[in-house]
Image 1: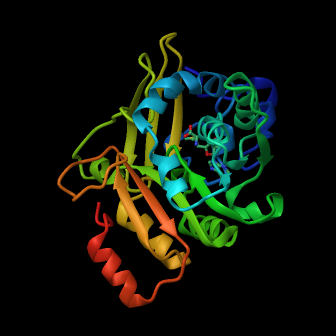
Image 2: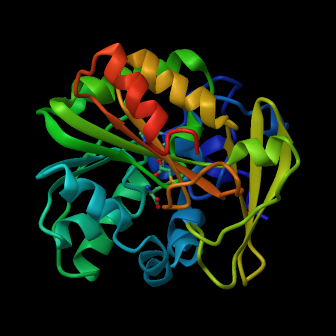
Amino acid sequence: MTAHANADQLKDRKPGDAVDSIALNEQDFGDNPIEVRESDHYAQEYVGGLVDKWDDLINWKKRARSEGNFFVDQLKARGVETVLDVATGTGFHSARLVEEGFDTVSADGSPQMLAKAFQNGLEYGGHVLRVVHADWRWLNQDVHGEYDAIICLGNSFTHLFNEHDRRKALAEFYSMLKPDGVLILDQRNYDSILDGVAGSNRTYYYCGDQVSAEPDHVDDGLARYKYTFPDGSQYFLNMFPLRKDYTRGLLRNVGFQRIDTYGDFQQTDGSTTPDYFIHVAEKTYRTAEELAELDAAGPNAA
Ligand code: SAM
């Protein structure tokens, strides 16, 4: 059980004091973990042991098989050349996209995850990932240029705990896209969890054999997941349970035009219960009539 921060760093800390996440070896959820509902907290969750074990959780080979070419096909179909991966994590998608020839920049707000990504880039194919430490809410301060595509994958957007932060992050993403750019953002199917339709399922993203990922606490404002590893160690992530249509509404409100939502990498008619939703949001301007036509024809209602 490693839900406490390393003692040296935290012994003199008062509530509200900032923690230098780069020095943390262990997660810090304080005395009342289910009250931790802050957009800033992620950097204290992706630390130490969890960073080292993350790749057991997501098993790169199996993940590559289950995702297939979905993201690469989406990008190639739009003629994408430059990609900003804003939630690089340990580098799975960045490394894959570099391998496929995309000009990729890899950002993340957790310095420990980025360090691991850099190392993984070298190990898996000898790629020198261009990593940038940046938080989505002020992404433009640290990452420059415009991109054909931005990806925010692996159920990352769930780490923002209030609408103000979500809108600001999406506005930053939108502004860093070229006029015909695309944002691909995924999320766990929290609707089914909140509505009691399904429990945890790690078929698609969390493909490690030996690792269990299960909800520890779920309410309208928090999905706290527990990850148990073969050595008995346990880690937690506190996330905001985004409803699918809420995320789509936010994307539309920020200015994205056509938004296609896929379930587990497939077009879906809403008759199945996917584990994950993938929103593909285009910036290209459409008239209201065009959008209505596309909405009626496309897999928007996943
Ligand atoms: N995309 C990777 C994957 O699929 O394996 C990583 C996913 S991990 C669940 C979420 C990542 O989002 C973490 O690396 C975390 O540091 C990053 N993150 C969360 N909130 C962030 C924020 N506000 N700004 C930048 N990065 C953030």
